[in-house]
Image 1 (cartoon, rainbow, N blue to C red):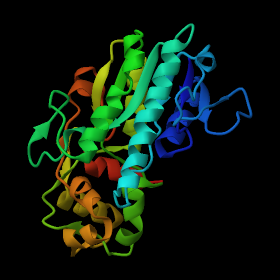
Image 2 (cartoon, one colour):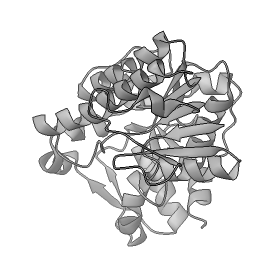
Image 3 (tube, helix red, strand yellow):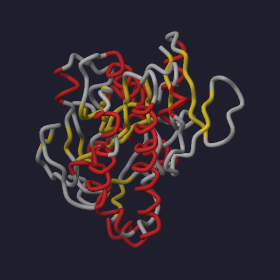
Length: 298
């Protein structure tokens, strides 16, 4: 297959493109500068018409991963506009180019987020649950809707709603490793809030599974089947590193630093991958202990 990938140099994108190429795929990277090789396509994700339909000629599938980082920054009005544009405009640009191509690529796999469900507390939610409340849930809802031009053109579209992707190279786990290795690990508040997570290994495997599954369309939760509370995650990470984690971080301290983002990102979300498992996907790292042991063994 010839597969175009946006944000190919990011944490997920770099791991995914390596794996695709190792499997024999021809990966073409969407870049925001002038293309330098036949393995690159230049585009402007924030501009209407910023990707030529002609550039999609010969592309079998597109995996769209672009989006400005959700955290750790205050959600000012300006930042919210950046978060929306980087996801919604870029998705519209790609979907429109695919719809206008001749011949059209057959598949669009579009990144999304488990934040679609909002704060769920202890309630378990799967893909049948409606969108939640708040900025992040609204952003994800509109982000997924932006792929409509591709769907309307008969292209298979799947949105993968990822939880916190755990990798020692960045993201949540990467940021926590330095303090935890110093014995400064801490749970947040009561620690009872749920974290929906997935290892980088299973994230990549699940995306490739959806790529190969001809009937896979619509939303899929990319989260491990066993969400954990913040206290459970804290104990598991400290245990994997052989370090104590005796501290508690008051949520109010983060609220002062980050504002609104604290409420949504630290809210409890207990999301499970019902459709992914029903389609036959099997996790390498179904529980947090297995995942951390594998991720930290390198």
